[in-house]
Length: 326
Image (cartoon, rainbow, N blue to C red; front, side):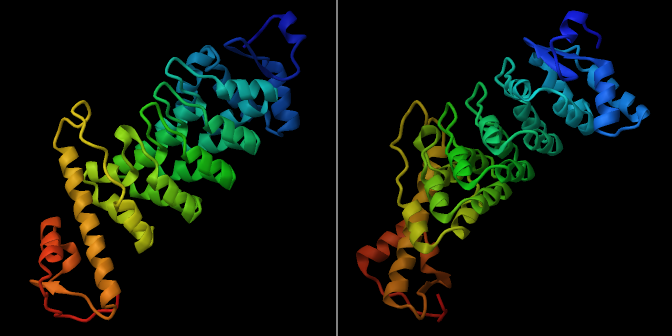
C-alpha cells in the first residue's frame, strides 16, 4: 500500500501504524523479505499481496479477518516487520467487543497464529496479552476453555511461567467465573486435565475451591450441569482427604433470582450424595481397612443420602459380603 513521501521519511520499518490504520511500504517490505528473510522474489511478492489485501481494514476489524484468512507465513512476516512498541499496540488493540488478536484466535481455535503471536513477544508480554479481557471479562484462556480447545489452552499456558499461569487461571470474568469454571460448566474434561498438569497440586485445589458465578465452586458447576465426566475428572485428580474437603464446601443458599430452575436442587442432591458417600467410605476405611460393607450387593458409600443417614442413625449391621483392599 503506497503512502506519502512524508510518511516514508518518519518510519524505519516496512509496516507501521498511524492511529488505528496500518500502512505498508511495499518496496521496503520487498527488500526486507528478500535480503533479511531470504525469500525469493516470487514468494516475497505473494506474501506482500496477502498482507496488503488486509490493510484496507483498520485495527478495529483487521484481526477478525486476518487471523482466519491470512496465511500463517504472512502473519509471521507482518509481526516481524513492525517496530516492537507498535507490535504490542497492535496485539493489545481491542475491537468493539473487547477482542484482541488472541481473543479472535482463541474463538476460532487457530493455534498456529496463537503460537506466532506469542513467539513474537517476551514472556512478560505474553502474560500481558493473555490477561486482557473482553466485554464479558473473559481472557483468551476463558475463550479456549469454554470452547474445549485443549491444544490452545496448552499453548497459552506453556508460554508463561508457573506463577503467571496460576495468576492467569485465577482471573475471574464479570460473572465471577475462572477459566476452570468455564471448562467444567461446558463439560470439557481434556481442558481440565491440561490445567491440572500445568499447576501444582496446592494450586489445583485452590482453583477448584474458587467461587464463580452464583458463588459456586468448580465441583458445584459440574453438579449443576450434571456433568459426570467432569466430576470423575476432579475426583481422580485429588486425594481422599482433598475430595472430602471439596464436597464439604456447601452450595450457596437458595436465591430465587438465580436458582429458578431444577438445576439448583439437582446440584444440592448430587453434592449431598457425594458428601454422604465420602463420609461413609471414610468411616469404613477407618474402622475396617481390610474390607468394605455391602448392602444388596452394592458398596455402602454409593447409597443415596437417605440410606446413609439411616445407617448412621440406626446403627444397623450390614453384612460384610466381600473383602477388598482399599
